[in-house]
Image (tube, rainbow, N blue to C red; front, side):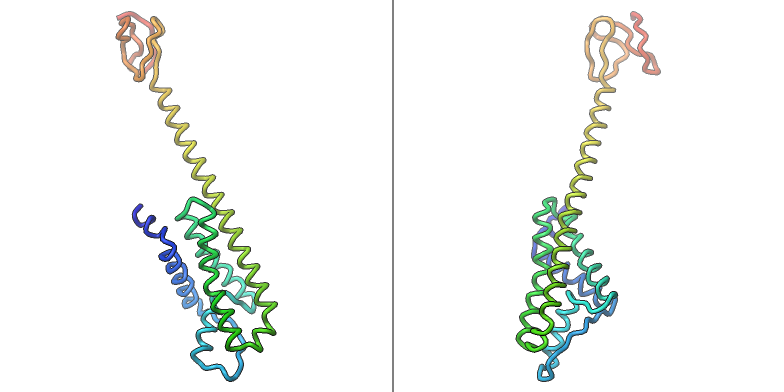
Length: 202
């Protein structure tokens, strides 16, 4: 429980999500194709390329990879928070940072290609963002429904057990919250060893 509370910190959750995205990027060796102007330095190119790898794709594999990784990391807040608003706000916060810095750096250091590719880039960003919101809200509500259903089922089972443990003396009407053998009020034999009512006197 303490670990779950620790992960409720947005900063910690953000770092965890980015680390998972980076780890998956390394495992799958994913690299999106981005065009740069010739004058850009290698350091800036590397940074923009890294940011692009988090959010952009050029082919079917890239599409599957990007959506798979973002849906995967979007599941983490779903299991941490019970409120779907917190879930999608956390996921959008994580989604916002690589997008923001990618657009800012790409525009600043490769303006020509940025202007040419912007319509395509922004459409991909919007669609992915909407997908993350839908996944966040949808799965949060489903999980909340499942938890509520399990809770109600558990409460119903407890009520059934409680009702089964109650017994009324058929002779005098005294109610018991347990299953005694004899009624303390009239000494009526309530049950035999099998728990069957036989109604004989003591």
